[in-house]
Image 1 (tube, rainbow, N blue to C red):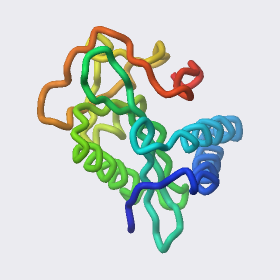
Image 2 (cartoon, one colour):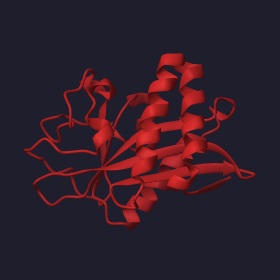
Image 3 (cartoon, rainbow, N blue to C red):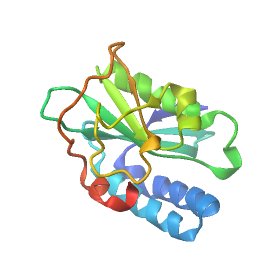
Image 4 (cartoon, one colour):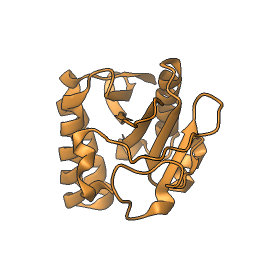
Length: 178
């Protein structure tokens, strides 16, 4: 298994992965929605505001994740992990967890202080995420399921309380993802 950053030139391949995985697990409408989101995120990959990491087996893409920067008035470096996909036939083998760990290690090397995500607490707790109250860090948009707001510190310090709602990359300003 090879884990590495991916770039905008791999957009078609990455969008295809997310589309097929989410269509298979959540239905065609969800597949289309995630294809649209990942197409937008892939076009923003810039090694600063949006980062992408992928898992490959024999040069075949089998997993991908995105991290996008959240901006606060306070100078703290926070990224959001979303979305994540692993090829349907490869799920349940720990590939997603290993890919997330790879991405977190890369962010830690960049001195990122906090990573948050919005998803299944049972899954993300396996890679160190814990429930996060919006009294500590607010989501960029009102959450429909606040129990899925999760975070982890990468610098060993407690997650700082942020008084302001962060700004995010344009695709995540759409309430449909929240």
